[in-house]
Length: 557
Image (cartoon, rainbow, N blue to C red; front, side, top):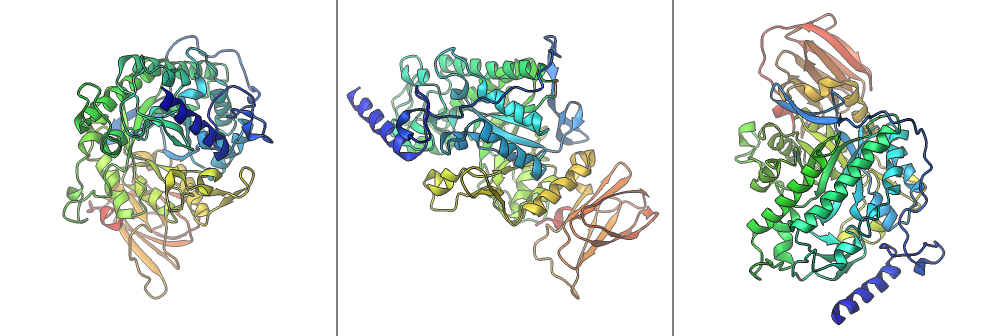
């Protein structure tokens, strides 16, 4: 006990110096960082409150649908173009000392970028620090911002397993104090202090008492969303819940890295036992979400599940794409988890293509999606277009990285950790757009313009231009020709053409980011040759000719 108190005292002392805060009593004074806890104080004033529109019945907001061999998200009965951006509110509050009101500018920036949804953390400790003492002011605030900027939102449940670890900034104090009821696993990391997430340890993730308490918190969160939405016009801002965050890191890496011991045998835990613990926790929490009246899909994200190794025998055909890793399949098969996605952190178009195909066409019933991919990649527009052409959704990680994370090399990395498509230039007020921002915004707007065609069209009929490596100009012009199953589309431009031609239900949808000469053949069009203006959607009816062999796949990467 004495050793633990010394560790705790040292950690808290370091915390006051570091700039990040954990939850203790007191009111934070920005002129005196030693004055106590600061985490998002300043509840956002309510607005638009109405009489309740729900009368206690279940409300189906979103679900996963498979039609004609393709799986996608439906929101309020309509196909949903999943193009997101992560907003790490936890970092901005814990480390950059944002109040709730100061988070609003991030939602405003997400709206300006044009994404269809934002991924926003809810730390268990945000709502319940002491047992059954609930505070929903943070949740209230982000719901207001989502409605104010007409954004859909996924709630990222940051609970007991955060990238394989347990953090004191995320888990309530009463859980961490009570080591008898909520057992901690014996591991080298126990008591270690990390200034981004607080004290570190490993809870016994599938302990029944722990799962019951965490599931109770998840239910409280969803019940609050139901009631809040009912009293704010029923706009249904929350469309999904990510259950935990890269929970697979525990059995894939943490057990070996930190010598995590099995509580029954006292020996280093096996991979299989770690997988079991995490799977049971995920399933229990996912079922808790599903038991609530506010019905949304559940998903979980995996930490670079493929390691970039997605092909066998080269890139020549879809048959060379590997199957989903066993642990990813195990998560997908859980009753409480609807879909699984990859946090790939790859800017290789061929790798993105393969992962999208692995998680989609090779995993029947799963909506393939990139739950996180680095927003600082200069080829983000091409990566998003690639993902959609192979039937996957895409979330940018992140919208803007916490300045504290950047200044202090989050995760101890020697690499640049500024992963946002925006950079914060003075800690809270000015957001600088990176060079690829405008093209990314244009691609997003183009995909939204195509509507259900961008979501439901088969891969063979979604021709993505400008995502083929080593396309060289001829005579000062870039020329690329791609077949869908009915139409040959040739695009010619003075710069690399970037855009799409989607064949869907007897129409061809064309959208290019720069002025492009378009020539159409095989099918019959009223105007088979025209110049496509930059940023304009063309919807063309046609009469089919002979069936074509699609060349979509070979024109990616």
